Image 1 (tube, helix red, strand yellow):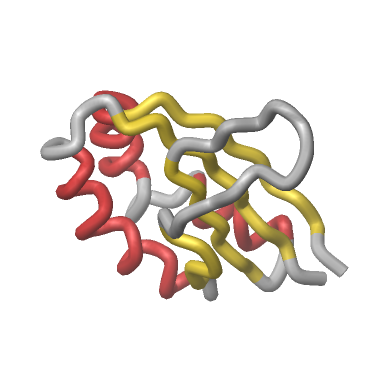
Image 2 (cartoon, rainbow, N blue to C red):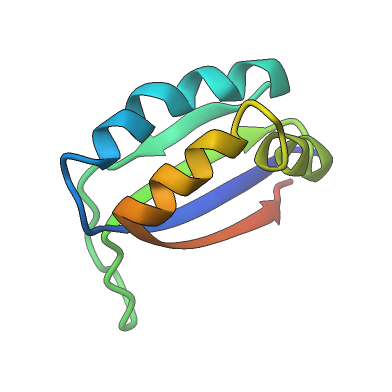
Length: 95
């Protein structure tokens, strides 16, 4: 069953995040991940949520999503992201 990682990034260092953005996509490929949304404009329909930079990544399963997130390929990028953005992230099972 498909799974989605949904991320809300509040970018605190626009120059620094460029290195992360340039390298992150390649780490998805071995795990079957693909971007569905990557920072497009969002509009509030209801509620008080004001997302910053929204990213949605699709995987074939929750297990694959976690494998990517915990992978050796992605690990070096976690520090870059942590230094350049405040991150809120979840993984959710699709239908």
